[in-house]
Length: 127
Image (cartoon, rainbow, N blue to C red; front, side, top):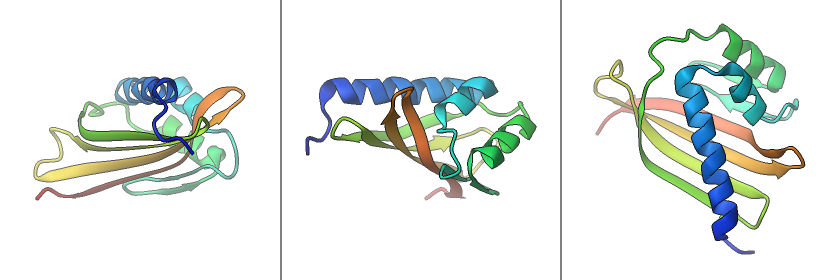
């Protein structure tokens, strides 16, 4: 299996960047589009465990749209073959003094494009 095929990695990087832009602008339709619409899709958030796209969709639609700006660091996107990838990043928000957020996503290619099939967000004390 080839790791980090340049054109595949570029596709996932573009999808990840699109997701990040949608996240900080609270573009709910794009956020929903980029998560696979399936009961198997899981998102563990900083304060919630969401099983299936119905729960993820309800969370996204109810989430406050303020204080979403953040700065990313140490982002690592790795592709495995042509149809699977992981994206991991750390993030900082002005409202999280002394803390750092961590985000991991598993992306899979479907006929409709790259979609997140599993995600985990957590916040810890910054070292």
